[in-house]
Amino acid sequence: MNPKDLVKKYIEMGQVLQLATVKNNQPAVCNLHYAFDEISNLYWMSLRSTKHSENLRNNKRTAVSILHDPNNKQCVHIEGEAYELTGEEAAKAHEIYGDRFGQKEQRLTEAQSDNPMLRTYYVFLPKVIMLFDEENFPDNSPQKVSI
Image (cartoon, rainbow, N blue to C red):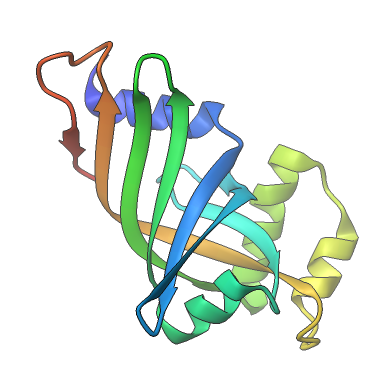
Protein backbone atom coordinates (compact mmCIF):
# COMPACT_ATOMS: atom_id res chain seq x y z
CA MET A 1 0.00 0.00 0.00
CA ASN A 2 1.32 3.47 -0.78
CA PRO A 3 1.82 6.07 1.98
CA LYS A 4 -1.14 8.25 0.93
CA ASP A 5 -3.52 5.26 1.07
CA LEU A 6 -2.17 4.26 4.48
CA VAL A 7 -2.73 7.78 5.85
CA LYS A 8 -6.32 7.68 4.61
CA LYS A 9 -6.81 4.19 6.10
CA TYR A 10 -5.39 5.17 9.51
CA ILE A 11 -7.50 8.33 9.66
CA GLU A 12 -10.63 6.37 8.72
CA MET A 13 -9.97 3.60 11.24
CA GLY A 14 -9.16 5.91 14.14
CA GLN A 15 -11.67 7.63 16.36
CA VAL A 16 -9.54 9.67 18.76
CA LEU A 17 -6.86 12.19 17.89
CA GLN A 18 -4.38 14.03 20.07
CA LEU A 19 -4.49 17.78 19.50
CA ALA A 20 -1.52 19.96 20.45
CA THR A 21 -2.00 23.70 20.91
CA VAL A 22 0.15 26.46 22.35
CA LYS A 23 -0.39 29.81 24.02
CA ASN A 24 2.37 32.07 25.35
CA ASN A 25 4.91 29.29 24.74
CA GLN A 26 2.90 26.93 26.97
CA PRO A 27 1.98 23.72 25.15
CA ALA A 28 -1.20 21.78 25.80
CA VAL A 29 -2.45 18.46 24.46
CA CYS A 30 -5.86 16.80 24.58
CA ASN A 31 -7.70 13.80 23.15
CA LEU A 32 -10.76 14.34 20.97
CA HIS A 33 -13.18 12.16 19.01
CA TYR A 34 -13.09 13.24 15.38
CA ALA A 35 -14.76 12.87 12.02
CA PHE A 36 -13.19 13.53 8.62
CA ASP A 37 -14.12 14.51 5.09
CA GLU A 38 -12.94 13.22 1.73
CA ILE A 39 -9.80 15.38 1.78
CA SER A 40 -8.74 14.49 5.33
CA ASN A 41 -9.90 17.66 7.05
CA LEU A 42 -10.68 16.67 10.64
CA TYR A 43 -13.72 17.84 12.65
CA TRP A 44 -14.52 17.71 16.35
CA MET A 45 -16.79 19.26 18.91
CA SER A 46 -15.53 20.96 22.06
CA LEU A 47 -16.66 23.36 24.70
CA ARG A 48 -15.65 26.89 23.77
CA SER A 49 -14.32 27.28 27.33
CA THR A 50 -11.67 24.52 27.16
CA LYS A 51 -7.99 25.35 27.19
CA HIS A 52 -7.46 24.01 23.65
CA SER A 53 -10.41 26.04 22.31
CA GLU A 54 -9.04 29.19 23.95
CA ASN A 55 -5.58 28.45 22.58
CA LEU A 56 -6.98 28.05 19.05
CA ARG A 57 -8.67 31.45 19.25
CA ASN A 58 -5.22 32.96 19.85
CA ASN A 59 -3.14 30.74 17.54
CA LYS A 60 -4.71 28.54 14.88
CA ARG A 61 -1.42 26.72 14.10
CA THR A 62 -1.57 23.30 15.69
CA ALA A 63 -0.63 19.65 15.32
CA VAL A 64 -2.56 16.39 15.44
CA SER A 65 -1.48 12.81 16.02
CA ILE A 66 -3.54 9.69 15.27
CA LEU A 67 -2.16 6.42 16.62
CA HIS A 68 -3.00 3.35 14.56
CA ASP A 69 -0.88 0.50 15.96
CA PRO A 70 1.69 1.08 18.70
CA ASN A 71 3.26 -2.36 18.23
CA ASN A 72 4.16 -1.63 14.61
CA LYS A 73 4.84 2.03 15.32
CA GLN A 74 2.08 3.13 12.95
CA CYS A 75 0.72 6.64 13.35
CA VAL A 76 0.03 9.82 11.47
CA HIS A 77 1.40 13.19 12.59
CA ILE A 78 -0.07 16.25 10.93
CA GLU A 79 0.75 19.94 11.17
CA GLY A 80 -1.86 22.46 10.13
CA GLU A 81 -4.38 25.03 11.26
CA ALA A 82 -7.61 24.70 13.20
CA TYR A 83 -10.42 27.08 14.00
CA GLU A 84 -14.00 27.31 15.23
CA LEU A 85 -16.72 26.93 12.62
CA THR A 86 -19.80 29.11 12.26
CA GLY A 87 -22.80 29.34 9.96
CA GLU A 88 -22.80 27.03 6.94
CA GLU A 89 -19.39 25.63 7.85
CA ALA A 90 -20.77 24.51 11.23
CA ALA A 91 -23.78 22.94 9.51
CA LYS A 92 -21.45 21.01 7.16
CA ALA A 93 -19.36 19.82 10.13
CA HIS A 94 -22.57 18.78 11.90
CA GLU A 95 -23.45 16.50 8.98
CA ILE A 96 -19.96 14.99 8.77
CA TYR A 97 -19.71 14.47 12.54
CA GLY A 98 -23.24 13.09 12.71
CA ASP A 99 -22.55 10.60 9.92
CA ARG A 100 -19.81 9.13 12.08
CA PHE A 101 -21.23 9.42 15.59
CA GLY A 102 -24.98 9.67 15.05
CA GLN A 103 -27.04 12.76 14.34
CA LYS A 104 -28.01 14.79 17.40
CA GLU A 105 -29.69 18.11 16.63
CA GLN A 106 -28.61 19.45 20.04
CA ARG A 107 -25.05 19.64 18.73
CA LEU A 108 -25.99 22.04 15.93
CA THR A 109 -28.16 24.10 18.28
CA GLU A 110 -25.18 24.53 20.62
CA ALA A 111 -22.77 25.30 17.77
CA GLN A 112 -25.05 27.99 16.36
CA SER A 113 -25.46 29.72 19.73
CA ASP A 114 -23.09 32.42 20.97
CA ASN A 115 -23.01 30.95 24.49
CA PRO A 116 -19.33 30.65 25.52
CA MET A 117 -20.20 27.77 27.88
CA LEU A 118 -21.55 25.50 25.11
CA ARG A 119 -19.85 23.27 22.55
CA THR A 120 -19.11 24.13 18.96
CA TYR A 121 -17.51 22.53 15.92
CA TYR A 122 -13.88 22.94 14.91
CA VAL A 123 -11.99 21.99 11.76
CA PHE A 124 -8.35 21.04 11.33
CA LEU A 125 -6.83 21.72 7.89
CA PRO A 126 -3.73 19.58 7.22
CA LYS A 127 -0.62 21.23 5.82
CA VAL A 128 2.17 18.68 6.45
CA ILE A 129 1.51 14.96 6.92
CA MET A 130 4.09 12.52 8.23
CA LEU A 131 3.38 8.78 8.22
CA PHE A 132 5.25 6.66 10.75
CA ASP A 133 4.99 2.99 9.82
CA GLU A 134 7.79 0.58 10.61
CA GLU A 135 5.82 -2.43 9.35
CA ASN A 136 5.32 -1.17 5.80
CA PHE A 137 8.45 1.02 5.63
CA PRO A 138 11.00 -0.53 8.02
CA ASP A 139 13.93 1.28 6.41
CA ASN A 140 12.17 4.50 5.48
CA SER A 141 9.95 5.74 8.29
CA PRO A 142 8.68 8.42 8.55
CA GLN A 143 7.30 9.17 5.11
CA LYS A 144 6.25 12.70 4.14
CA VAL A 145 2.87 12.43 2.41
CA SER A 146 1.57 15.04 -0.01
CA ILE A 147 -1.88 16.43 0.64
